[in-house]
Length: 161
Image (tube, rainbow, N blue to C red):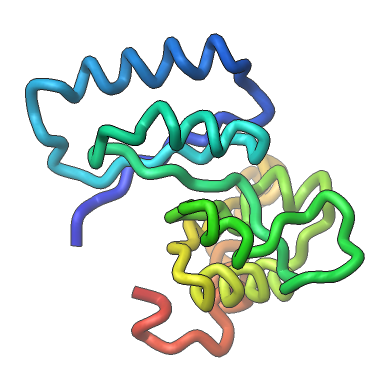
């Protein structure tokens, strides 16, 4: 399996800055095929623009920064895995530390998101990580183990791979 390098833009970007960045990335990859897979996880509002800028390239895939654990319904602001797949998103971040910290996403919610992504044909990028206090408190490994077990709960080995 190839390694994956994924860039997370967080809540950054603009139409002009995105175009400049994509042009630079494509120019850097023009003379050699990468030995790894590359994805850009961009804010949802820029997915269409970035896909358009990458239309003539197979070197970089587009990912989303989040995916809803819900299939559809009254979840204002959420984007379902099916919606993301329909517009060609290949990867989605699930479990990012900021989503855990600022939005209270639990391991159960992240597990549901991972399952929705897989069911829609999107490869989830499962993020785990400890806080500074947890690391300094010497509980890094137990925290990561809990996140791994919770996030991957009830997934088959094929789904995990």
